[in-house]
Each structure stands twice: as structure tokens, then as C-alpha cells.
Image (cartoon, rainbow, N blue to C red; front, side):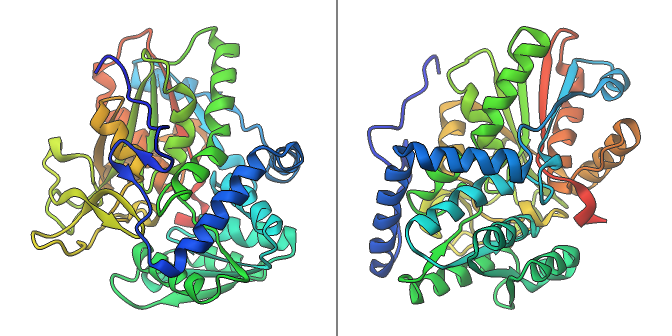
Length: 395
């Protein structure tokens, strides 16, 4: 399409996607959160506190590193890496956790609950809770607890209570269910610190806004380094927070192509992957539906049951995608495809041995998507890959 439809006419909607599909008991706390966030956006003191913690606690700005050896090895375009892995706690998740932690304090909520898959959002939430003096409970599927044991230990070291979830597939979807149940029960004292651009309004917008610092920095840094905008952006997409954080600043720049890479897992059959928007590659099972408060593309069976998913990366192992990504895909403003577990593992090894960077397996999917397309790029193309987290947790 030649122009992109602006979604601002209806708050919380991205074209037909998004919205607020929750039990009546959650409408009041969500409305309270909307009011608190709107007031915080207009308050210079909140912005100052947020930016101060991003700089002095989280370690922003993160570098935009020219991957010279990787660029030479692939023999194609010039590649830059946005180094979110260098943030405190090891991933981009700290950006949003700081923002929502400050909102919890502003609303007088002494307790936060959070969900986590790969553990990075749980660690970030526990870290911010410790910094701000909040009680923290993190829900995590027991399957994810087993494969991300280091992060479980880190959360407990920081003072958080980690609650294992045995229901369903024992992964991220089930952890979100339990966190929402806790929130419903304790809305007066508790803020739900949701970790991605998912859930009911205002979460997809609010989480995107807190992560948009990634794209603002990247834009300034690439202009300073190359005196031009990138031709392509690559980011992995589970719920989609790191990707939308990078993409958002470039939405109006039609010359910048944006590519989100999903988890192709072990194959295209339903239950073997977590690819919601990669139907062109034969990945089956995704169609619009409602999951955990929002209308978006959801992996589901023929009779509408939420389908099981698989990815070697716990952070991408989720059956739905953020509603803004669904809209960007429909509009043709961003494109989405999937790579396999094996491709992601190979990309992680390649980056480690060429650049001395061990990426999170989530981030390795973004790099694998670039590698898969390398023959299609011209020498003068300029690419930014978001390295959303480091791979210590995946060893």
C-alpha cells in the first residue's frame, strides 16, 4: 500500500486489532492504568525519572556496533547490531520494566506481578522491584523454569517469589493466565507488569512507548555513523516488544523495510512452531482471534482451541503476536517470516565466533532471518539487526 493507515482514531486499536477483551472485574484497573499512563506522559517529572533510570541504572544508550567481520563473511550489505544485550539484566526488557515500575509507584501499588518465558522479563521485573522497593511475584511455566534455571536463580536472588505454573503447556501462555488470575484477585494493591506488546489496552501501546527508545537511539546513531537511514531492520518477534521498539521510530520512513522473524521451530505443522504471520512459508494454524485480552493473529486448531507451540527459544514460544504487528503485516508496512531452531542455533554460533557476541536464542532468530536472505541484498544496503538480549541464559 502507498500509505499506512493511522490507528490513532480509536485508542488501543491498530486497524481491527487490539482492543480490550477482559472480564468486568479488570475494566476498572485497566481504566485506572490508562488514566495513570496518560497523566505520566504529560508529567515532565515522570519523564525525567524514567530517562534517569534508563541512563544511570539500565545503561542507556546502548551502542550501535558495525559488525565488520560478519559483514565481510556474509559478503553482502553493511550490518550494524543494536546492542540491547549490553543493558543491565542482559536484555531490552528492562526498558519497559522501569517504566511500569514507576507507574506502579505513581498509582500507589506496592506489589507487582509479572509473567516470564525466557526469564528475562522476570529478571527485569524483579530488578526494578528491588530498586523501587516493591514486592514482586513472577509466574513462570515449569517447562521454562527447567530450561532457564539461571534466570530463576537470579529472580530469587533479587527477592522475587517465582511461582511455577504446571497447567497447559507449562510455558509463557500459561504463565500469563496465572498472572492475570493473581491480578484479578489483588487489583487494589497490585500492578500487572506485562512484558510484551500484548494484552488489553493500554498495554500494547504503553509497552511499545517504553521500548521506542531503541529505535530513537538507533536512528540517531546510524545517521551519525553513515549519514543515511538504514535500508532494512531485522528483529525477532515473539510478542514483539523488541521489534516494535526498533520499528516504531521508522514507521514514517517508507524507504526503510522492516522484517520480523518468528520461531519456525521444528517444522510447519501446527504444534511444531510459533509462527503466526509466516503463512507464505507454509506455517499453519494462525488466524485472527482473541487471546488474553487482545484481538490479533493466534495459532489455533480448526475448532478454535489455542494450539500448542514449540521453539528452542522460550521467549518466542507463544501462540499470539502483538496486535500492532498484526496490523503492520496486513498493511504491508512490515514483513514477517520464520526460521527454524537449527537456523537460529547456527546463527548464534556464527555471531559468537565472528564478533565475540553470544546472542540470546531469541535474537539469533533475527540474525538467521538476515542470513537466509543475504543473497537478495545489494552491496550498498545498510542493515540494523536488533540483538535484543545476551545468551548467557541459554548455555
